[in-house]
Length: 468
Image (cartoon, rainbow, N blue to C red; front, side):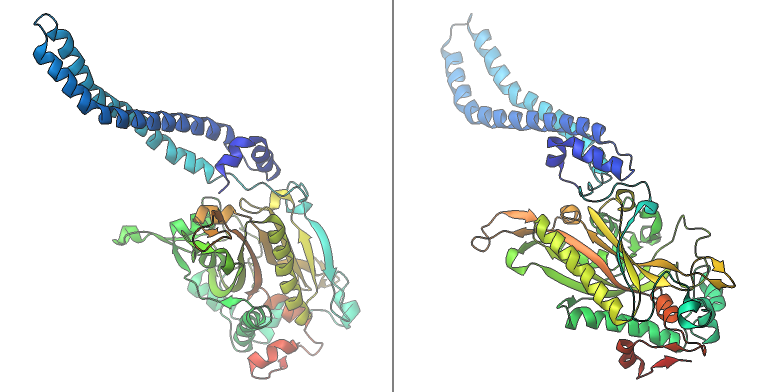
């Protein structure tokens, strides 16, 4: 959620920011409604102050007038009685006026909040302006020793590559027909060494973040209340991507939703809390099963492990101080952790600076990391040409999520006495599997049909150094 005060002071920044993201939001209407609400709120507060003053003075005034009424000649008594009646009626009239203003505030607040939740965080000024993901800009790429992304696989390795689907079939790593039989499209069953590889990726990713980078491992629920999805910025935008479990229709007290990332649970931990500044930064990592409906993705990557409804993901989240430079520094560090992780697995990749239209509602900046997948791309000369495929997204959100979650920290000073401000948050994938299995299988496949297991994963696979 954006800062309403900042919006009032500089609406053009938010109007321009929404336009750069290609989002149609009702900022002008919001400002009109907010002005009306504030006017009603001010009038209500002024009336309450006057009401308290009158109630304080009413007793002495009534006593004085009652005394005058008893002593007054008959011809003056009606006038004094009129004053007494007016004094008695004034508090009642003020209560009605206050109630009328309260009703205005009650009526406007839901609509104001509804619009406010749709207003995107403006992109940072150094984010390139673009109309779609086609306008994302490559920052840099890394090539594994002896293998260069973008060049034909056969020219570098001396044989035509198999796709991960073919490798899964030949090495019995996954069973797609039975997965579809049980759960429908975009489903799968990992088998044998495929399941071992999947688990090895996740376990290595958690250990890498905990033991090498000092993150705290935490488990999180994957079934959460709606307010957790709203608080983390996944609702109302993106609601169509979530699986909705309507417990309220089955006698439950509230509905729940399956999360599409561990970020939701990690950020929800400190909702409505005031942290001490000395606690920051909080560096959390989790591994969780994730669920995405892939609504709107009909016909895209329907086969294989690339675009699926259920997967497991190791996610990193940093909650830090309200400081733009601190957030920027953490963004670079978190990307660096992932680069080191991918390099240790020998996976060629590139960094993409996402343009404004590809940031989504909640990000001020986002960098995607794409791994080279030899089995993707067009088929040329009987073999796929290869292509980059997204495996990670690193997001910088400033206080957008923390404001929605009401997550603050107490600045400096004596404990419990400093001012409170909203935290900043960042997140980045560490490893999403089985998607990350695709480049591992395809890049490390051998001419004899086997797959070399990257050295860091072998200890998690019982010492296995090759599959097949």
